[in-house]
Image (cartoon, rainbow, N blue to C red; front, side, top):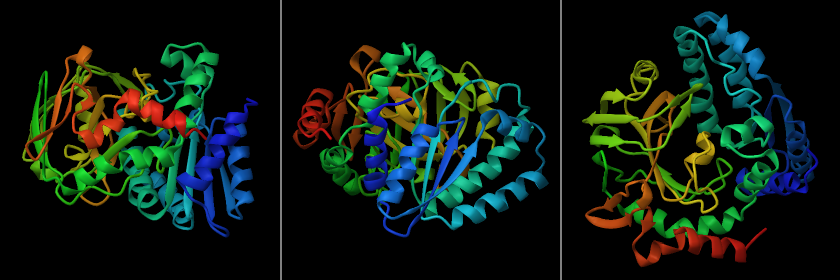
Length: 374
């Protein structure tokens, strides 16, 4: 694809998302021939004086590795990959998925072994040791999954990815400040009544830092503090399965009951390790250019008027080999919902209610971002 927007996005990723400095090493991990993105990222890294290292991967070949993996083979794979990751200052991955069903039919025991060591590499090392950013690629398959013509999808992709994320970060700062002072969160919506603590958990704003597109304020929770139940009204595509009608019940931080249209498969995932049934993240989404789900979590979790409540990994409070961002919409037409912080209503039916947060509502944020476009 020859598109000037690729260079614009690469520049922002290198300068802002991973803020590369001269002499730093960056691993550019490219899947299924996303060469134009790789070329742009390498050029930008070299322009700022960093040292890019390129890794070319294939979903089809990775499937073969997983189908025949053993504990011994994956441990050896992990040791090699971990040695390289430990040596990097930054990590950027571009996933161009040519077939969303590539991992279909892999036995659950094989996926469990792979996820165990993949999780150790990415959640145990990459998240902790490197500056990182995750990207997608707007190909025909992605467009088809999203239900769009490829040309329309490319416009959607770059509209959401080539935003002024430094400005978005500034707009999100008041919400982040509020979350840093908050102890109890309560969420009420159809099929949902849950509460938990985020006391001392919230980190500085990171819009556009760790993944693009962005548009969320997220944080870990105190895992054992979560009690209640939550229902999700959006589909979730995870580990090559499309889950719908997801409902979780939690007691003292543990998911004691999980149901969906694929209840058995869902519980296999939640049994990946001892912390997979705890919650690793609570986040509120507010990207005004993402208005409907497209069956890709990296986009869906940033959708305006949504939140996600994530089983699995947080590197500090809840290390796990999975991190499953399951998204639900609080838009009025989806049934609405409320988020309370220490007894104060901060968002109703997907719209922030406090005066200092209303710049995050879709129309207001669009105006701010369009006035400060790249």
